[in-house]
Image 1 (tube, rainbow, N blue to C red):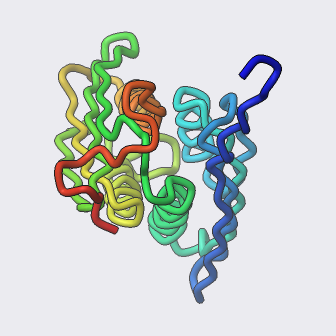
Image 2 (cartoon, helix red, strand yellow):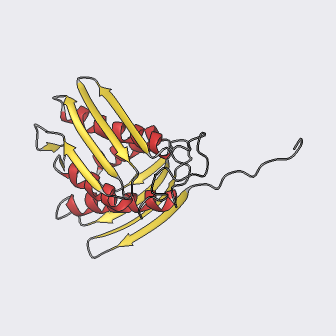
Length: 207
């Protein structure tokens, strides 16, 4: 009716805290943000990647982690993936009205990475990203797979990430994070053609 204002859709936000003997992590996530990020994990390169992910997914993300970095970066990286995945799952709620699927083919100089995501409730990671150097700065490159595995399994998403080209490890990692970001941005977007509908022939997406 003329002059009548429809209520705004609820913000898709989440706050998650996780504390173990190895790490203590808190995160706040807004799926309908503008890409603002305040990230402090104690791992400079991981902070850089998470900031890029938030920016290109248009998520607002605040995440602070304290971990046993005197041992290595494994626990902090993996547990950060766990918390971010739990936050995404919580913020999505029952997943009504989303596009569900997202994909991106993203260049970063000589590197080219592809990501595809299905917000299915069925966690899986297919990771085909070879790295030459074992480290970027002080961070082990094998930890990127650990991060995305923890993220996918706690978010309840199917995630495929593959490298099509690339030799510079920094470019390869950044292309992967940005490709995942763009795929997530597409997948969580409201679908104007099916508002309020569950995007599944089952009538539900598994929890």
